[in-house]
Image 1 (tube, rainbow, N blue to C red):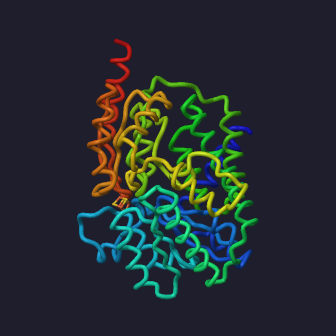
Image 2: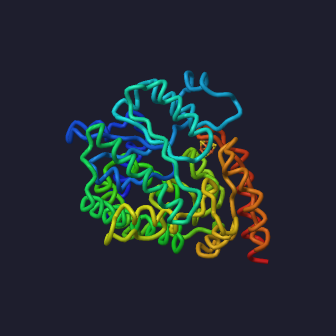
Image 3: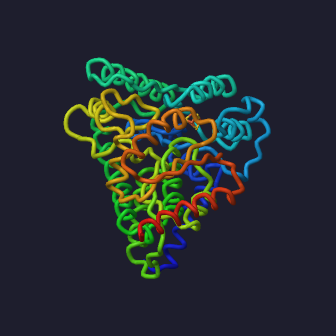
Length: 390
Ligand code: SF4
C-alpha cells in the first residue's frame, strides 16, 4: 500500500473517531434495521451482542472540542470528565441512534451514570453489567453466566435475535480474529515503534469501536499492510516508554502526539482496551457462553477495575515492561479516576523494585494545553537516553 493510501486510511479513521453523531452507526441501522447498543469502557461481551445481530458501539467520551454545559450540571467538580461528556452527548441528541447503553461495572461513577441514564432516557435499554470479583467458576462463573443470560434476554426482548449457540461460536471466531490483529499490531509496534506511531494506532482503534467488527477487521488489515509497506518511516533516537492508567477516560489525541514529539516511543499502553481485555483466543468448541465466562475469569488483563484475587498488584505491569522493552513508565491517569489513582502507589512500588524509571501526570479528556506535560515527558525521555548511554 502506498504512503498516500495510508494517509487516506488514517483520514477515514480520524473522521469516524471525530464524528460525535455516530454517522457509521446511523448508516448501519438504516441499512440493517438492527439494534445498536452503546457501552462504556472497559469491557463488555461484544461477541454476545454480535451473535444476536446487535451492533456494539463503544462510548469513550469526548475531546476538547465539545463544550460541556448540561453535563456539568449533573456532576460535582471533583470527579472525572467522561460522565459529563457522555451526558452532554446524550442530551444533545448525538447518541440518538443508540437503542440502549450497557454500563459495565468499572467504578461508582459509571454505576451512578447508569442510574442517570435510566432517568434521562426512559425509553432506552439501560443495563448495568455486573462482572464477577470472585473467580471460582462455581461462584463467580455461575453468577456471570446468569448476568450474560439476563443481558441476552433483555436484548431479545428489545427486538434482537434470540440467543443461538452456533451464532455465538461464529461471533467468538470473528472477535478472536480482531483480537489477533490488535495483538499483532501491538507486537509490531514493540519491535518497530517508528512504523506504528501510537497516535496513529490509537485513532485506528477508536474507529474500530463504532463500526461493525467485520469492518474493523478490514480496517486493521489495511492499516497493517500500509505500515509494513511504508518505507519512509525511520527510527529516531526516542525513549521507549510504557503508558499506563488510561483505560477508561481516554486522553486527548494531542496529548499522545505531545508525548511522541517530546521524545517518547509509546511501546505499550492501556488505550481502547476492549480488544485486549481477553488476552488470547476464546475457544469456540463446547458451550460458547461458558467459554465467554471462563475467558473473563481466567484470561482477563489485570485491570485496576478488577479484583485480582491471588495475583500480585503490579506483577502484570512489570511483565509488560519486560515484554515491551520499555525503558520507563508513564503513569498517565485521568484526574479524579479512583481506580487508576488508588492502584498507582502499588504499581509504582512494583516498578521501583525493578529500577525502571517512572514519572506521573494526570489529564482530562478535554485538556487542551500540553506545554507542562511536554516539558515533563521531554525531560524524562532525555534522562532515559542520557543514562542509557552513560
Ligand atoms: S475515568 Fe476512572 S473514575 Fe472516571 S468513570 Fe472511568 S474508571 Fe471511573
